[in-house]
Image (spheres, rainbow, N blue to C red):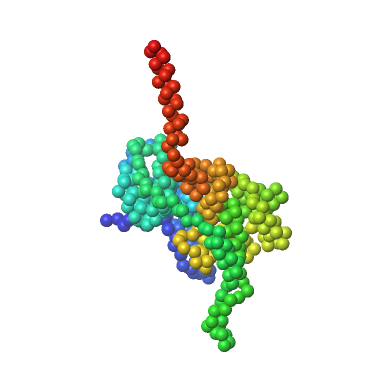
Length: 398
């Protein structure tokens, strides 16, 4: 029985002696009986991996003609979707990670094997219901794109798990202050390795969480998403959101990026926050971005934010997105009209009313007053109309 092929892979060919000449160890691509030179030495393993990936991508091109769903590998569907629609997605690394997870589980299965039971097994395999739902939505989009390209016969339906309950955790004013002060006052602790204090933890002069205090202030006062806050800059530059300190406008959509359903619309900066941001820029506290770590912009604050929440001893699950929930809740509690608050936060009025409307002081106020009001007030409006209709009917009959 013939041995099954292992597919294209890298092999480090050891150094060889040819007479007086010694050939260095090099990376070779093995593909069946073929040996493809990469020109990469032993220390250039990373470059060799890139060449292997390019070789596989060039060799393997999914078939683009209509076939029955019993003969189409789901990996082909995902590959076509990534190739056609990937460049249009803003967060391409996120899409690639999602495609990788889907390909790990669904690759090798045919389109006809997508059933409700198999989708439920994927949810169990993924572990997180929310993450599994997002992955399956991507799978559904890939299948729909494949169908629009007329590349398969038959109907394939992806079964999604139910949506989880919306997060309703928001911060009170005192909790927000406690979180900010925890970030501002925290000092890094290090272990002493010498002297009479050896083995003890002492506080240093380093303040590693102060950049989070600025992040939290911007999030609470503008309700902006974490990604736009991290890329916010006082200077106009491609790929970053821009805060016009002269006009006091926060252009949350990164320059050069197209708008999406995230609604990252421009919004005025509140006066108190604008005063802080102008002071940060004037004193040189910020260089290229408002939120920086050791002079460089941050990509994510999840780790530091989790530490800050623990220091502040806040209950429940508090994440950077909680700041957006908090801003929306505070606006509703202050009685701001829904259409104004929705425009300021960059979300639809329907979404704001459905998710945060119950925090508005006028929410069900009319119903609460009507349930205890006297019925005569309503009857006095109805009875005269009834009498008029009866009298007019009698005159017509007469």
